[in-house]
Amino acid sequence: MSKRPKELDEKLAEISNSSDEKIIDALEKIESSEHKGKLKATITAVAKIAGVHPNTVRNRPWVKSRLKVIKNRRKQLIDSNSDNSKLPNKPAVEEMLRDRIRALLEQNAILYQEILGVNSEMKRKDNEISVLKRRLNIKNKLK
Image (tube, rainbow, N blue to C red; front, side, top):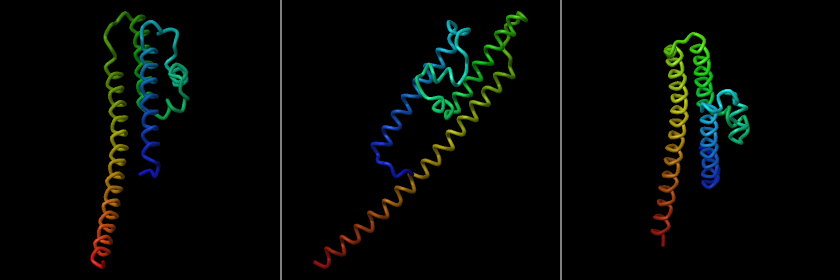
């Protein structure tokens, strides 16, 4: 677990959540029908719209998978307009779902590691407390 102060961790989490919200809004703007031809579905475009650094976007694997989905949908629309077929491409949807599941599993693994770290930190603190209690009891007995 990190040795940063609790307040700093909270502030970093707040900044991360704020960035996530901005990125989600940017993705929705790119995906909306009124901006389809004007805005590219790229990491750089998302970062520019969201007002964050491109690395902030790159470090979130779910953004990459969502951009793939947007690109696939645009491609399908182009293909369907040229072919006049309205059926969605089933393999593309399945691949998108697989990518999303992979991203969720990766996030789950990261959270699990963090929980293990917090548990070990709690055990260490409990041990320190019990040692301090024993020392206090010994001092009280000697008085």
